[in-house]
Image 1: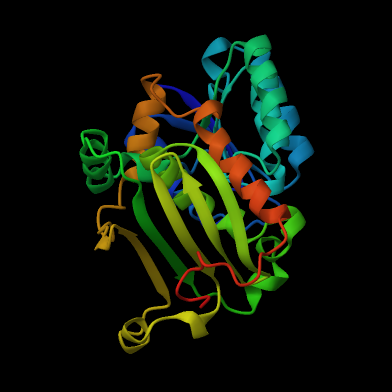
Image 2: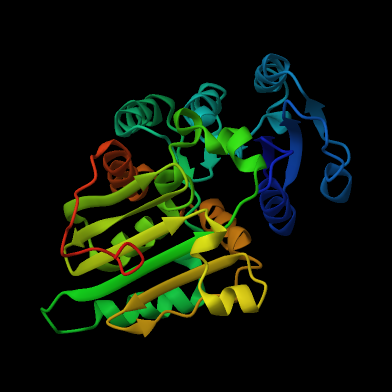
Length: 313
């Protein structure tokens, strides 16, 4: 049994991590969040020490590090807002724990360089949560693509619309300096998936850049990708509106829809199983997508490109 601690335990994604820690028969020693709506701990680990002040959490983990080895934290799970990931990963390495961090691992590529150095100095690992890479249906597509003999580039269309209410703009998610904007906050999962499928970026364009929607073109080693990301409910296609769905997610490869709406229930548990067997995804796996979304965030849109996504046209 391994000992865990967690940051951002009151957040949206934390329950999936709590479930994964429990499913893998491990223990949660400590948790922190500035918000105290954390009754969910009773469902999983009611004996967990909880702190609303990060400084007290930090001090508690340091105390555990200096106590009985059986009480030391082995893994720090990081579910805090994106701009805090780098600092919380550093905390994990400082107390002699491995880090398991939600995406994006960091907001800026150069932070990865220092984290790699800290990994070597500490002897500990930084793991990222690439849950789409352990989805059974998506693994089958990866295997099929890897076995293909064709040298022609695949034509890919990514469309992701997840309509959000007014609260979004008033939270950290709506602040580009904290979330990295929508390409980073909601797009990094899909960019990572496509690079896992088709290789690293060769050419990158942005055609639309607004606070609530972005679009562009990405040439990868083995694919050309037109992508569109949006938080605007007015972008939802008619079939989604008629079905009263607030989210539309579509990836087409050479005109064929990739189906992965099911099978999401235990992906975090699979990620944890890989990490605990030293097979998790690390900094080098995260780097291409981090660099790409950073570039997208800082590029000026190109007008009237012939490679625009249909929603832009």
